[in-house]
Image 1: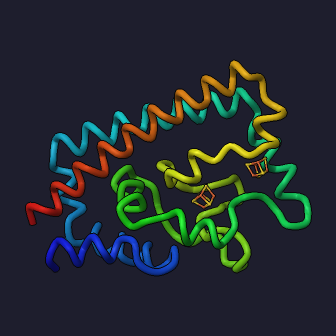
Image 2: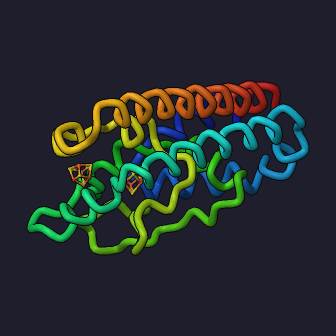
Length: 174
Ligand code: SF4
Ligand code: SF4
C-alpha cells in the first residue's frame, strides 16, 4: 500500500478499525521496525518516560480519584467516545512494538475498548488521554505535585512524538 493510504488508514474509523489497521501494519512491517536501531532505542526511551510518569501518578494516588468516578453513575473519563476519538493506529502500533498485547478488553459499548479491570491497558496512551487533567484532579492535588506531573507528561509526549516520527519516516521509505 502506498504511504498516503497507509497514513490515512491510521486515523479512520473507530478504535476497533484503528486496531485492525495497527495489526496489519505490525504484520507487514513490525519485524523490520524491530530491527531498526533508532526505533528500538527510542522505544526504550519512551518506556522509561512512561514508567517515570506512572510512578509519579501512583505517588499522587490518582488511581483512587479515577476509581471513585468510575464507581459513580456516568462512570469515569474513559468512554467509548474517547477511545474512538483519541486513539490512532500509529500509537496502537507503538504499543504493540513495545510488547503490549493490544486488544479489545472492554465490550460494554459504554467505556473505551482498551479500559481493562486495572485501567488503561496501553503503555503509550493517546495525547489527549495523557494531557487530560480534570478539575477534580487539579483541585485535590498538591500544586507542586501537579507541576511535576505536567513536566513528566510533557517529557513522555515528546518521546512518543519522536517515536511516531521515526515510524512515519520508516513507512515513507517502504
Ligand atoms: S480523570 Fe478526573 S474526572 Fe476522569 S475519572 Fe479521573 S478523577 Fe474522574
Ligand atoms: S486512557 Fe486508555 S482506556 Fe482511557 S480513553 Fe484513553 S485509551 Fe481509552
